[in-house]
Structures are given as C-alpha cells and as structure tokens.
Amino acid sequence: MGTAQALGFTGARPSQLTLDPPWTPVFLWEKVTLTCQGSGTPGPTSWYRNTQFWEQTASSHIHVSEGSSGSSSYQCRSPGTELSSPVTLSFSNDWLVLQVPVGSLLEGDTLPLRCRGWKGKSITQVQFFREWEVLGGPSPTTELLLPSLQLHHSGRYRCQATMRTIFQEKKESALVTVNVQELFSVPVLRLEGLAKLPEGAPLALHCLSHHSPLRPLARLQHLFYRNKVVVGGPQGSSQLWLPAVGLLHSGNYSCEVRTETSSVRKYSALVAVMVYRVPVSGVSLAVQPPGGLVAEGDHLELACSVAAGTGPLSFSWHRQGLAAPLATGPRYKLRAVQQQDGGRYHCTATNGGTTADSPPLWVTVLVPVANATIAMTRTEPSVPAGESLNLSCSVQAGTTPVTFTWLRDGQELGSGPVLTLGTVEQAHAGTYQCLATNRLSTRRIFRVYSPALVLSVTQPQRGWRQQGTAMAVGLSMSLLLLLLLSAAMAWHLRHRRHRGRSPTPGTGGRVGGPKWGESPPHQLGGDQWGCTPHPPSWLGLSPQCPWLRVLGGFGGPGGPPCLKPTSPHLIWVCRATGKSQGR
Image 1: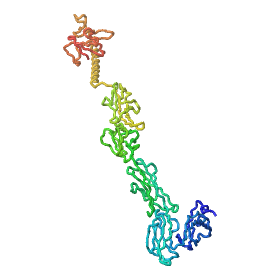
Image 2 (image 1 turned 120 degrees about the vertical axis):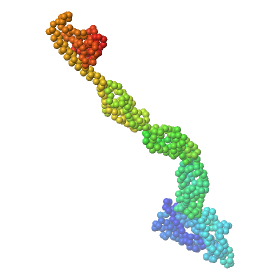
Image 3 (image 1 turned 180 degrees about the horizontal axis):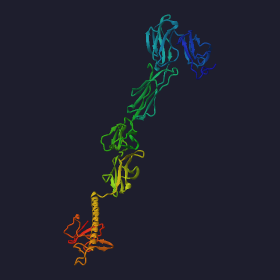
Image 4 (image 1 turned 30 degrees about the vertical axis):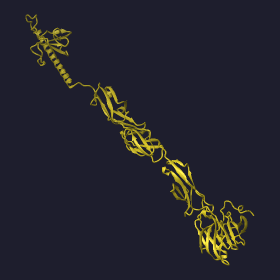
C-alpha cells in the first residue's frame, strides 16, 4: 500500500474528516464514528491510518474502537477530492482523562476543556491546570471554556478531581498537549516607493499578512496608524493610498490586522516616512492670445505655473509701475483690455518657504484706427484751375504705424498721409477718400474710411469791377466810333460846300479858311483825316482848351493833326496846355 500523500490528488479540494464524539482522548472500547465529507461525487471512501492506506468503504463513515491505550492519526479521501488533514485520536485506560476537541485549534477559537472519570464515574472538586497554572476550580463543574485562544495558550493541560473508587480519593489526568495555530501571520508594512519623498507625491502603504490554510476564507480587517493615531481603516483592503502627502504626513507608520470580532489582533513593525518640501522654481507665464498681442476691447488671460515646488502654492500678479499686486491666484483675466493695460507683467509664486518670480511678459494693446478725416488748404472743395493743392489725411485714434491709401472715384491713387496734387487741372476733379489702416497681425487688420470729399475744378473769371470797366470801355469805344463817323460825314459835306464858294481874300484862295484848332483835310495812303474845332460836350473835356483828336502812338504836336475815324484808340490833346486825355 502507498502512503496517504502518494494517493492524494493535487489541485482538488481536500476532504473534511470529523469525529463523533469530537473529543480526545476517549476510554478504551468506546466507539468513535469517523465521517469523510467531500465533493458529493458518488464512490467509495478511502481511509488512512498513520499515513498508510487502511481501508476502503462504500459509505462515507467508519467506526473506530480500541482495546489498548495509544494514539493513531486518521485521514480520508472522498471521490474527486484530496486527502483530508490528519486527526489524532487517543485511547486511555486511566481513571481520569482531560478531553479536548479533535482537530486543529486556531487563534480566536474557543477551547472547551472536559474532565471525565472512568466509565462516567462521578467526580467532584474539579480543577484545571495549564502546566502548573491553575485555570479554574476546585468546582463541581466538569467543563471549562477558554475563549479567544491566542498563541500563548499553546501548552500542556491537565485536570484534577475527587472521585470514589474503593475510597474517596483525588485523581489526576494525563497531560494533553494543546497546539494553537496562527489564524494569520504577523503583518508586515511595506511602502510603495521611497520612505523619503517630496511634498505632493503619492504614498501607498501595504499591510501584508497570510491566512492559515486551515481557514483560508477568514475575514480580516486592516487598520493603519501614524504615530499611533489611526489614519486609515478599519477596512477589508490591505492597502492605504494617499494621493498627495504633505509635511504633516511625516512620521512612524504601522498597520494592524484583526478579526471582525477583534478576538485576534496583530501589529506590524514601525516604518518611518519623511516628507520634505521642494523649493519653488521654474515659474513661467502663459498668455492667451499667444504673444500678448491684443486689440483694445479683446479678452486677455494670463496663467502662472511652476516647474517645481511643493506645499500650498500661492500666486500674485504684478505690472511694472504699480506697487500693489493686481490680483492673486494662478490666473489673471481681463475681460475687455484697454490701452492703459499694456505693459510688462510677471507673477510671483511662493509655498511659504521659498519665493520665485516668472520672467516678464510684455502685453501690447493696439488701438484700432478710428475717425479718419481729410483736410485741405482751401475752405471750399471748389478749386480754380491753375492753383496748387494738397490733401492730408489723419485719424483721431489708432496705434502707430498707420498707413494711408488715397482713392479717387474708388480707384487707388497713392499712399501716405499727404496727397500732393500740384497744379490743379480739370482731371483732378472727383470724389476723394483716404483709407487708414493699422494691424495687430497678418490676420487682424483694422481699416477705416474717411468721409468722401467731392472736389470740383473751375475756370478763372475776372471780378465784377473788371467786367464793368471792360463794358464801359467797350461802350465808350462804340460811341466814339459813332461820333467819328458823324464827324467824318459832317466834314465831307462841309468840304463839298467850300468847293462851291469863292475864295476869301487873304486866305490863299481857300474858301472860309480854317480857324485856330482846325486843320485842313490830309491825304495819307488814300484815307482822309479831319479835325473838329471842338470836342463833343458829352466827352467831359474843357471847352476853354482847343482839342485835337490824335491816334494813339501817332498824335501829339508833331504828329498828324487828325485821326482816322476808324481808329480803335483815341487821344485828345489840348493845344494850349499840351495835356492829353484818352477815351
């Protein structure tokens, strides 16, 4: 026959062996029933004694009885299961025995002790001992209950009692060894990572303990302590997770594993954890929109962050030129930026122990161009041809540089703040506008058009006085021509009359010789010239002076004495004074 271990089936659940009555030792010839509980699969049950195959039965139980003192170890195996744990059963031939439960005793179990006389004889004055320590009695009670066994309860037990044999005498049982096994091992506290860690780092604690294979499903609770103060649990999980530790998390940690009734409690050794504060460094600024370029009225948001630094961080915002902080917190927002919000910004970060500043960030606020207007040197948009004219364009608001583009009748004409037209001609007439532009980026360009200026060009005209003078001269010339014609006709008629009259003596044969101031007609180039003795009264000349009509440029005392009637320009000369007056 093979050994019990050799006949086991690895991987299957073990069978469970129970005894009835569940005590050991028992007296000789007492019958004990052994029952093997397995998976429930039909089939024979194999029995082993002192690790050797002993018997096979069709049923799951077997009866045992011994006629001699001694102890034996029993095991069983049901179909589809492994061998059960061994159970020791002892048979005694003493007057008095101390009975303890058959099977394994674990921490937290209750241990009943039973003092019994031979064949049920009555006993009194019962006492129970562990080694030499009295546990209870003397008492008429034959049983003693020891609750919540601990490992230190392992040892040798006995009982003492008075019983009647032939005489009333004291009897003492044999020693019975009680072995209390661990329900779970002493826990070990393990750290996930280093025991020295920076502030803000996570900390994971594991309380490791192993269940007894005899009670693999025992329900246990876990607690965690820092400096003897509970910081986690009780909980079923064996792990404590701290997502971010602070300086106050430094200390000595331990853990406890216990049963739900707290009948068994075990503690780990201490583990020191040190948390240190990291100085603030690497402070930086982020800005939206990128680059810190904004137009007036835009939304601006600044964010401050640190590359390193632990503890409760605080932030403050500053702008160059201002003594007081603008705001606190990791973000600074301006809902509608104004021109005065431009400048150099920085943030300051501190954790209470160290302080650091970010590099400066320039925020540029652009004012869009607005209210473009055109100015000119004249007050009226009507310009006479031939004059010199310049147009200038300006804006009421707008961050430089501002560019100007000139348009005439919608067509681009030139650029710059001043448009030089030079000498105005009719081609310069039209509708003028200027376009003012500034930009925040290649994608954000601001434009504004000036009001339209309608420019007209006129031809130069004389003044009303010049026009009146010209009209008067023209009228005078017309009247003079009429007078000349009349005078010429009168002279012609008179000349014809004189031809028909006799010459007057002393006159050289002339008829009615000329008076002073007159001149005879002259023949010059086929034209006749004549003079009148006196100028017409409507000319406004002095009648006391004899006047001559002289052609401009030819008259005078040494010139021809008379004028051609059709001459366009006449000069009257006074023969007495030499003065002249033009008409």
